[in-house]
Structures are given as structure tokens and as C-alpha cells.
Length: 237
Image (cartoon, rainbow, N blue to C red; front, side):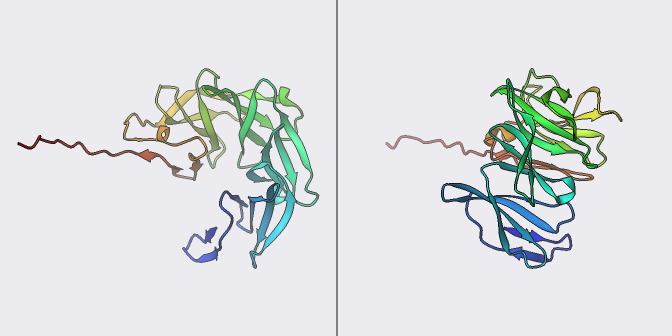
């Protein structure tokens, strides 16, 4: 695990178990991560200035984001999406799985809304919006149609667009859906980056290996780059 300031100064560089998954708080004052442990997984915190590991609880939930002003973690578990309180370690359910399996929840910059992915099967998924504090899955607002595969919904810094990867044009490309002030979709999703070149594409990566992040001016993602050589041979006389 390596943590650097924007200036490049390294403030943490330490070994952690393979298979660990970490998230950083918005202000950068602590890291939460889930690591393999005997009998399952454990959640740890590392806080400034010492950055020493603190065992928070035993949990198999996937850590998604720091929420509630740094007082909780947004997590995905077998039941759906929940909040994991950093003081009590209790999980409060936000969305229950049913016909759809919910995953990849992401909070708006002001923390008032959540974008969440509802997965129907390996070829069909859909982004929904949920106002934080509203109860039940019936409070979900559909943002996209469910006729294609969509993954990794991420908010832009101004909270007016959600960026995601989708095969809506039969290739895995990066798209953005604009929302209005009351969080309703504005028009259709617009392409940010087409990746129709077979050589370079996220389709070469597994879903677990692919990730997407959005900054104020850039989109960061990983893709597989495939190269090959063509050889010719002549039989010896």
C-alpha cells in the first residue's frame, strides 16, 4: 500500500496481504481496507499521522466509498448495499437485492445522492439513483435503460454527470449521462471515448480487474493492450 501527497511526497509504503482492497477518505486523513483473514475478511483503518493498522471489524462486505462525512463506509454485501458505521461496526441496509443484484454504489460530491448499478444478468445492467435517507428499493430512480451492459458508474466533480463503461454501441466504451437539478436524466448517454480498436480495450480485462475514476478534468481507467507477431517459415531443402 503506497500513499503519496499531490506534491509526490511519500507518506506511506507498507506491505499488506494480497487480495486487500482499500479506499481513501476525501480529505486523505485515513484509509480503510478489507484484507483476507482466517475464516473470512477483516476491515482495517489506518489514520494519520501514524498510519498504523487498526482492526475495525470482521466483515466480508466489499468496501466502495467513505460516506457520511467520514463516519461510515458504503459497502456491498450479499443482501445489497449498506452503510458500515466506523464506531459501532453495525451495517445499515440501504438497498436490498431482489430481481436485481446491486453493486458499484457511488456517492454524489455533496453526499445527497447515490448512483448504484443494478445487475440483471451477465449481459444486462442498469444505473439507478437513490436519494440518501430515502428508504427502500422502491425509491430508486432509473437513469439508464437495462437493455445493455453498464458498469462502474462514477460522478463528475460538479455532480451533473455520471460516467460509466458500456457496450451500448457493441464495443466497451466510456459514456456519460447528464442529470438535471432534480436528478432526472437529460437526453441520452453521450460517448466520451470510443474504443473500437481490438488492440486496446477494457474487454480484454475481467470485470474485477477493470476500474474507472473521474477527476475534475480527466477520466482514468485501465485497458488491455494486445500485440502479436506474425512469422513466416520456409521448409529446409
